[in-house]
Image 1 (cartoon, one colour):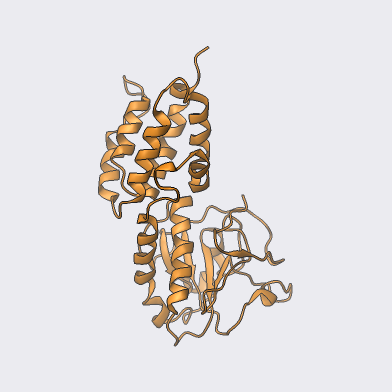
Image 2 (tube, one colour; image 1 turned 60 degrees about the vertical axis):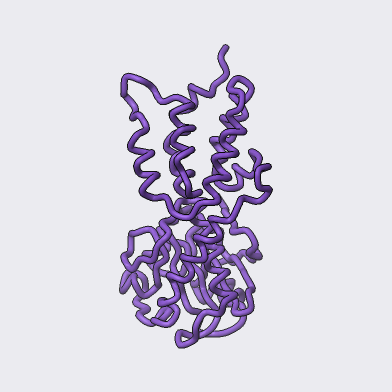
Length: 274
């Protein structure tokens, strides 16, 4: 638990019960004010907080870990992260704010596999507005307002670009970087079986870098998953099956999805023989 978004300054606040969530997307808010809202969110009397804040000049603050429930949007708190944006509903988000929200969203794609699209339907993965939740989310029809809501596709497009950029370190991506991008359990299994399965780590590293360089492969990933043998099939899933599926992956979030599905069934294949 306690996931923090890279490049954001962590300023923990008291306004959270600390209960864990697994967010399916990000809720865009407008602050209706300027300057950091830290003092308000750290005031017990306000009974309010947000996961993140995007300042006009590029300031980035995190108040509640992304996998902990903040007090930002009523019933939506249990299924979404939240980001406050400095300013007022009639003001466009600045370029720096768009970059900040896109960075936060890209982190959610890497960590939880958020869908790379705009949504106005509560319960769906994506970038959604506070107003979309209606009365259940506190009845805030003007948050963040049509001006900022209309910039969401620009944010998603920028998040795609961030995800498409080559992984830090290029061809030298190592197991620690796999862990940082949400591949922790899989990396541990690789450590246990790499000596016996020569070239596995190098193959996965190459597949990861190829995936990070691509932009959109949802259809291909669905095909790859459909071709993976299901539990109970006559032939069990093998390391080569998974590597073949990973080789067809061209999006980090989809790659993570394949690994999540496959890792539980790879345990036996990667466990050292005795």
